[in-house]
Amino acid sequence: MPRLVIRSSDIHAAGCFTLDDIANGTRILEYTGERITKAQGDDRYDGREFTYLFGVGDGALVIDGHGMAMFVNHSCDPNCETDEEKGRIYISSIRDIAAGEELTYDYCLYDGDDPAPCYCGSKTCRGSMYTREELRRQKRVEARKKKQAELGAKKNGVSTNGAGKKR
Ligand SMILES: [Zn+2]
Image 1 (cartoon, rainbow, N blue to C red):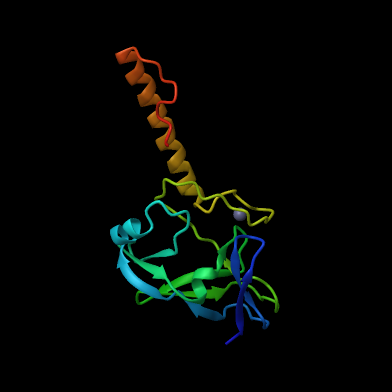
Image 2 (cartoon, rainbow, N blue to C red; image 1 turned 180 degrees about the vertical axis):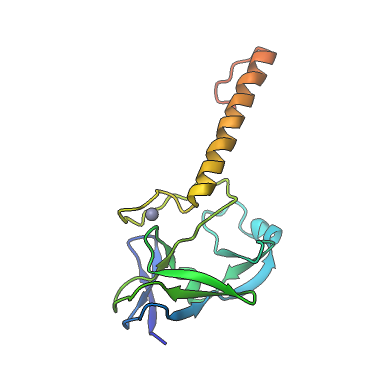
């Protein structure tokens, strides 16, 4: 197993770095932590800027990250990916990784209503940790809300200033 270290990262706060070369296709570490329901996770992290929740299976259960894996940052051009086997989540390399590199995988966030900006700095950065599909969904929801606010305003004859804006 490669030796890993947690230290400050240019991507975000702290990151997980390897001290050894890692070959492509290596299972590096497991995403460990308490298993709770999605609702419990939402409660636990309500109002907090960051969560370390990882959806398992159909997403009804989440792992509340505890350990090395929770420090692995998102990148839109990652060197690792996650895979699930019998309800356990593993982080594996998807290319050769050199000693000293930071480990990253694509968080592919979904189902969110808080912004999740990405600062990975890769050429293919999509500016968000949400999937492209989820970003399209959020745009549709936003457009629908706006339209409804406009229609509602017409009906009630009130100004829409600030309406439909969150917080
Ligand atoms: Zn990015």
